[in-house]
Amino acid sequence: MDKRKNGLIALIFLMAVACTPGEKVDEATGLLQAEVPYSVSKDLAQIKEDGVLHAITIYSSTSYFLYKGMPMGFEYELLSRLAEHLDLELKITIAEDIDELFTLLNEGEGDLIAYGLTITEPRKQLVHFTDYHYVTHQALVQRMPDNWRSLPGYKIDKQVISNTLELADDTVWVRENSSYSQRLQNLQDEIGATIPVAHIDGNVPTDEIIRMVVEGEIERTVADYNIAAINKTYYPILHIDTRISFSQRIAWAVRQNSPELLRAINAWIREEKKEDDYYVIYNKYFKNTKSFRGRIQSDFFSKNGNKISRYDPIIQKNATQIGWDWRFLSSQVYQESQFDPQATSWVGAGGLIQLMPATAKEVGVTDRFNPEQNLRGGVRYLEKMRANFDSVEDSIQKVKFTLAAFNCGAGHVYDAMRLAEKHGKDPTIWDGHVEEYLLKLMDKEYYYDEVVRHGFVRGTEPYNYVRDIFLRYEHYKKFIEL
Image 1 (tube, rainbow, N blue to C red):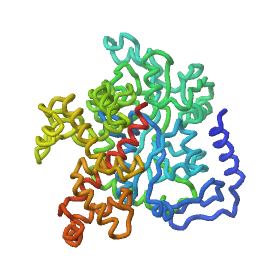
Image 2: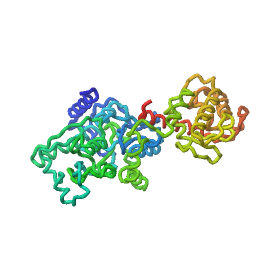
Image 3: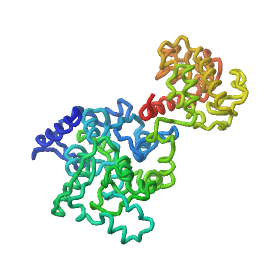
Image 4: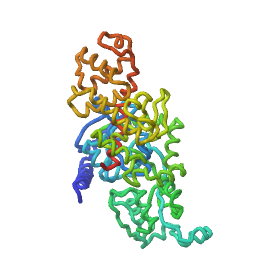
């Protein structure tokens, strides 16, 4: 048993002994405020002071993943909206398994579990659940007969387990400590018979276990019906019609010592559920069969391999030239063109890394829409921009100056550096110093300042450009090995 599982067991035990008749009830939520022995005490006020919403989730084909260079997933999209609503930066930590979700929350590595957890009584002793996101039920996932296409439905039913009573003495494979495992234990009492349960490593996601059923590695498993149903669109041989539970609520969770955060999330969920977008996001990941099949079949779905785009080899080669992580350069290319070599902007920039005609000529590019030429020329231009900032000693800060200059021109960045220095800021630090004065260059008070030589610039564009590339890079690092 590893250290994190030991920690989870200790937490469950300590919570059991902490619960006494004298516990308080939070008046706003009506929830029990147990003296829970969390390693941290942090609520919404402290989170807002830090400016970051730290969320914990699991890498899966519906929750959080990378597809064609874009971070995606039901949890990811909702988290992005929640962070924006709370005016916080979003940072995501990926847990290995469900046990680790709770351990990381307890240790303060995250403040919110953003994963589809079934609300159960044992888990309610560990956390406070948010309002539920959706309702589903647990279904038995098994293979249909090999000749199922030629069989009428009643014959298929005879050859599969179509009633929970038939599970007696038939092994079911599920993750240990999952709600599926717990449900099978309860089901044994209900049917008065033993259901052999084989446990699978806790870090194997449900969609991967379903694939094991398809490939015959195991005979059957249990999954939430919505997850089973979307997988069946790609694996039609699956039989998922045998219910093994009543309807169950699926929700996120916070520490029991974070009542303000819980109230804020619940208020947000209630408002989101009034909007069509909320249900569009749900349908995108759990009902849009065409989209799901497209992702599952793609070489650029992160669960299928270590690829971001079809241009990875060219990007890798040119990243070596400039000395950058190729995943970082990929993030910039995505920002510029979303990997479309024919992309053209409204100002006339073109190609993968969006070179203007004059810039292309300057760096020796004769065909901006040739991917190899475009990337080679783009990196040469990046190197030219970088050479303007020898005074910036920190390597990460220098990259940020370089990106900003690539986006809006080195002259405007120099103006922001002079303004920053004039107002007592450090002209060699981008974060919170020069970036702030680049934003101010949209204001007459600043672009008419005597130290400004290049006038007005839409500072929000380079400001967001730098931030977006770095944020996307953080996602790429989670899914793509160097």
